[in-house]
Image (cartoon, protein in one colour):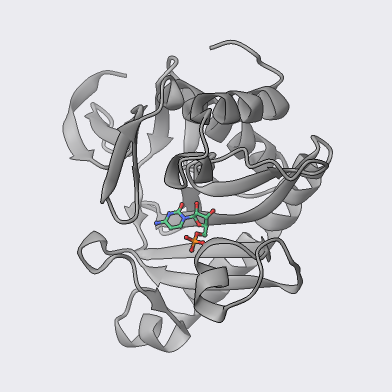
Length: 239
Ligand code: C5P
């Protein structure tokens, strides 16, 4: 497999083509952004940590029957993945109240929700990823009804698997974002990343934040939050 030209550069990752039309290379950067790109910075070694964390969690999910884009880790910052057409829906799963939910509904942060909430956002940077529902998705043809049912079922299963795993590591999975894609053979699989950039992770006992909220809210010691999650998830305490 040979690395070819840059296909796409996002806020936290670059995607390269390969000599195989069905495979891409993801490169994880240290760049961090928040509030629709208004706040920018760097988190030292974030790319290395996020590459490892995503691959470890995707392997756990694969073992539980969730199909993902993961093929193999190539080096500290790069992973070979299956090429997919990304579905333009960001799926957010919430177990505990935080973030935009708290602001939108005027509820307190940190409340265990009586039922898991699944939300859909239109993946569109220019519009700031607006909240949408099933009707918008069908009207804009972002996914069919059947595809959305499948995405929802997969999201619920991913939540169950990740919650169980993280509970055993002393971490509360507060909320997180998933992206799905369609392979050349028409299969819907999990893509993108699952990292402290895309999840809220709280220590179960101290409720300390171990995720990007440290960067978003200037809570300090951002790198050590990411390192702590690397250690809890992979057992690795160095990068
Ligand atoms: O900001 P909000 O509370 O809606 O975020 C919910 C979850 O989704 C958080 O874990 C956040 O990190 C993640 N998210 C994301 N990318 C976005 C929006 C939210 O990873 N564009």
